[in-house]
Length: 212
Image: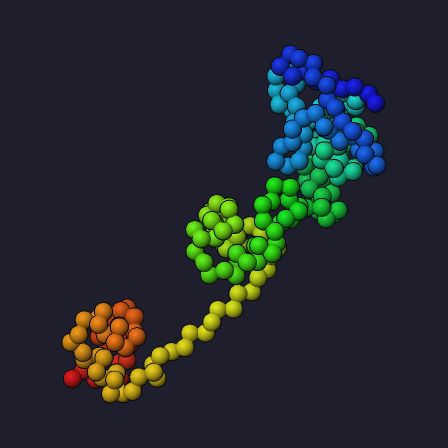
């Protein structure tokens, strides 16, 4: 197994790896970034391990070119598994192989698809959901608004609003519309919210009910 040394703040730190059943050199000595690629320090600059290995074993990487993985394994630093492509080509290759990470398959996902469905269907407040699932309120809002987890399609059937117009007799409607009681008292007595009482009093609702 060849040794690969990198300059880490002027110390020659060895890039260590293990070979798996697919011939991938899986880095074991450095830390991953959020996308699953290993990072290292070279000439006092941060670099991606697979790009460093490509230049060491193959050629200098031209500007605006990506180092891609034939094995589709971002942790691999085997130079035989690496090739150059444009950013567009890399994206096309990823889409063709249908390997876009989605939902709970993303390495840093903290939710399962079942939990996302529960969040989308829940009528609880954003704050309550944030505490329940231990994620930020903004993350809950993004799920609710379809910004994230777009592939989870949940049809929410809203209950039909039943008009209470026919709940009261004609005489009761006259009494409500002409009552001198406060809106709070009328609301409590007849089970009508204050906003609708105001509309009734102003003639916006129950227009056919006369004032006496």
